[in-house]
Length: 126
Image 1 (tube, rainbow, N blue to C red):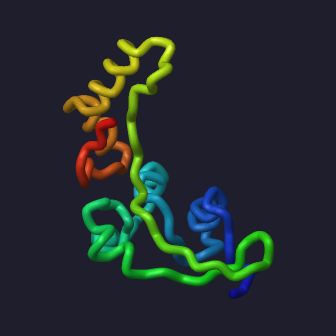
Image 2 (cartoon, rainbow, N blue to C red):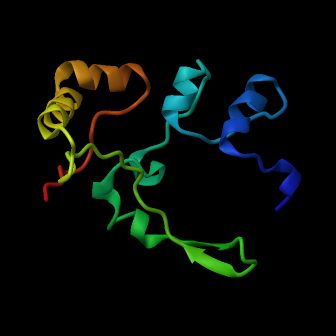
C-alpha cells in the first residue's frame, strides 16, 4: 500500500473536487450532497442491506495492520442507521414522535432527498 495515496474520508471528496485524485469511494449521501457523479454498487457489495449478510457480507474477510502493528482479519458488516427511543430518554414521548417522523413519508423524503436509500432489512424491536 502506498500511504501517500491513502486519505481520510473528509479529505477525499475535497481532493476529488479539486482534481487532485481521479476517483474515490465514499458514502452515497456525501457525494450527492457534493453534487458529484457516482457509480452505484449493488446491495451484494455495498453493505447497505442487512438481509445480504449471511449470503454475501459474512462470506468475505480481509487482513489489515492494526494501530498496534499487528495483522488482523476484518469482516464487513452492514452499514445501518438506527433510530431508537432510549429507556432512560428524558422525554420519551418526544423521542417516540421523532422516530415516528423519521418513519413517515415526510421523514423518508428527507432521507431520499439527501442521498439515503429507503430502509432495507427488518425493524429491530427490543
